[in-house]
Length: 130
Image 1 (cartoon, helix red, strand yellow):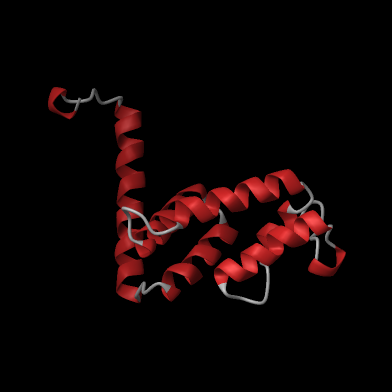
Image 2 (spheres, rainbow, N blue to C red):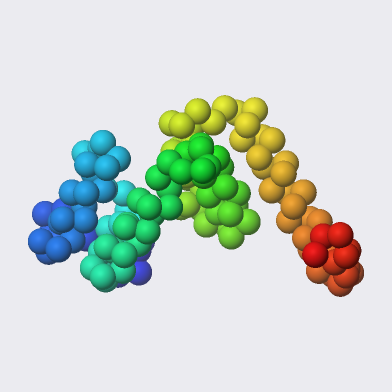
């Protein structure tokens, strides 16, 4: 259960409803997920976070699927079950296959392992990398 509960559309202030409406229109859906409903307790943070997500996840130099794969990788590393589920679903809608997911998890696992080894051994950065 969310710490402060969830704010459903019918219980939302006009300010929150405006963000919910934009989320649904942008995502071409008829529902708002629980992350936004929990964040709605702070309408300023809700609006700011939604605007940032829209901008950052919009098509750009990185393909939308690549952005979702990065989001999954970071979410796995941060152990955010909600974000893992949400962004795996989004990545699948953008074309992620089972093979891509397995390869992504192999890269995430290897990166986390070698990052911890480098940190533990306190390896100096090679001059050509600087």
